[in-house]
Length: 232
Image (cartoon, rainbow, N blue to C red; front, side, top):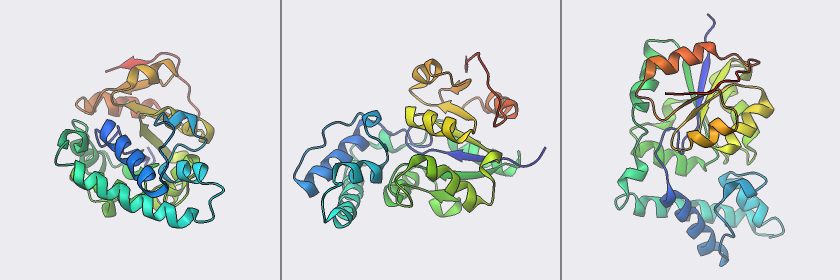
């Protein structure tokens, strides 16, 4: 079997991010712009990425680029200050570290990371999970605000065609992007019931059953559709 690329999202997929991360992002925007973020329901935004949301709400602001840089810096500062208070929200999803190592060392898969976060905030959250972003092909919204362009960029940096990739994610936007790009997705994390409703064929609460995940990965091909969803 030819080698496959496994691309992981970060929030909710590698890192057990929850309300604190969202609150820090909203606080950073308000601190820099003086205006509160209307909602942290990311699905309402055209591009639900850290850069995409800012560029949407500041579209007519002549200082948009300076403000985006300031928001990014403040966001990371807030994450760093909140992490000691909420370490559980900056912790790895159970089994993820061991699963990534197994993919690379035993199963022969290549691993990349693609996220809608800023590059700096992603690096911090991964570091909290014991992962060095420099060890992996990586793309973020600091490269492009459009989520469906982040995945192909991560694949390119890994030296793969996107058609060779399987994506692990947890968000509605991940479902949308992978379907637009025609790549298979395995659902992970707290929102698996929602992912089931959207028709994601295989979903897992975490990575503590690696044998089952590996079997499902072998089932998935870029053009394959599966009607029945299984939860492990």
